Length: 324
Image (tube, rainbow, N blue to C red):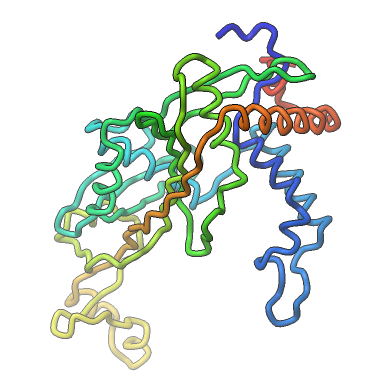
């Protein structure tokens, strides 16, 4: 696609952040923002708006952001793709290894300037969701042009999974998920629009947020005799082989026993959190005419905000400029 004549380049997560700013008053009344005991707001409307505005500017300016929860989702998405496509990771910063005896797949995520992150996933759960997506096209880059009163806008991004005429986006979330959480997100409009407008597809039936609500279990004790041990970078504990119970070394040392005595006699062990999930589909039928109307209104509103805050935007890619 020739980018000449493109006034702005926008991807869905920027629209999500803008939507969060628009939803500030709604968030003010959200349960998480109201103290159950006093009924007072935890954050004022001004605080919510300021945080949303800064998050949006950070996204536009591509300010690095690190989140363990986001990294967990990124790694699991790659694992699902590897399993259902029967391939190794395309990324050189992620490594997987299966440990059948513990019923898990371990993943190591390496990022420059940060300690390695280790995630462990339930083997059966990972295989089940991968089987569901078998045969789909994964991590498909799409882009399309949306005409607006402010010029042509290029919309673009990566589709997690495309299976026949349904677009899927994997979302991992914690225990506070409620159904419809992702209804206001814009991937469900941007990706089908790009597929149709670019000519890649004639019709899209629906968009599904495949919500994976994390569950956790503790692995069996991992000792130095287990292959998983070498993958872990955690402080081990000690257990009594007779009782199979952890030993409180500090407590025993306070009682006059030598720490070395227990370290010499008792095996080291540790446990790890193993992530499984409950699968909750958020399924939305797709209508292209409705999509064009919604996208046009939202994108034009976003452009007005962008131009009103242009002085704070340092990364000019959103203006289709590679340099200042």
